[in-house]
Image (cartoon, rainbow, N blue to C red; front, top):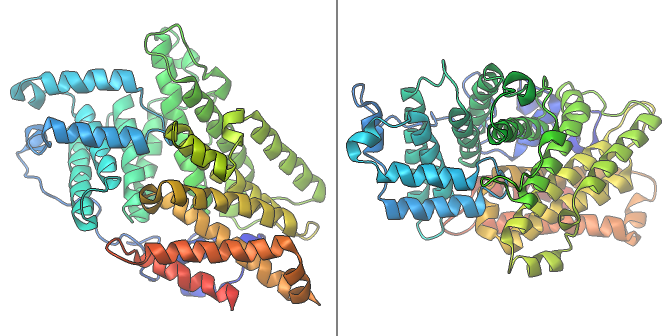
Length: 476
């Protein structure tokens, strides 16, 4: 195994078609089941979109199940509070202008409205519902899945497989995140494949100045933001699943995404900086980490290569604005009282960055050993971002599958490194005296405590319960 993050388990019981690293990471999925052709990752065995729809109902049937305006407004507010900070793909001002116009239409006019926009509304309602805390987990899940099914049906009404628009792509990006949060990683992965093809077909991977030179600046900016959302989703999902990246052919430059204060439809400068930081990181990760891990080959083949790659990652981190690098837990707790949006962005960006830096340090080849201390330092910083998220936004931490799964993989990596270090002569005694190793064991303990909390009560997670069992093996 070319990466310490992936060692330590008998993965033969999971007969995966992908890389060995995929099998290791997917040990956190429940139920344990050997993936087959119908259940690629061992989870989400049922079809993700329940069929509530008749053959003749069309778009009017979908429109008929919209909640009342007040309820929709509440769910939209929850979406923009919890989801939009992390994935700021939509332009809030123009979206709300279209949204209010839609609600002002008569019922007959709504029935003839843009089905792609209806799909976008419904998936935003679905994601907003996932983050509601005032209903029971069962009711929340059923309602969210119903809205997601309505979104998918609206996409069918606009023939999304043969046509594409900015709104259909936006809806599909959000449906993919919904499916992953809803324990349908297999379906999310497959759906993201269709999304990727449609984004290419629309030419979103091309520089807007080349393919739509006469388009207004705002439209060009939206194309860049949507492509960035597609690329970001593809890159970091392939990192977690150790599968090949797809968003690899593009000439859209992150440098062209700039805040335009002169436009009435300008973007928040902090959002633009967050997108640019995430995009720059994704470009580096896709090029240097995704492909090697999908083939179980070393990320770094020589010591010089590893030093250069670590320097590249540090350069990316230095390019982040100061607001995203000042992430002391106490300072973030203070900031959360006035600007929760920036706190959420800081935690997601921090988690992504240090998780991938951990993978670089943990990479091993014939000529390059694992950098044990570098791995444990990066893993600590990465998993601490999850601990802070849980402390400040516990309800949201329970919902975000990608954050949960990343933190679990970080705990696995720490456990593997500790286990291998303990096998060295005098290893146990040396580790007991080294604050870095003591802290690393503490990180596993803390992760187990959080997973134990998530496995109990009304919102009990079977996945969290299994993660506790897996991590306990490292502390025996």
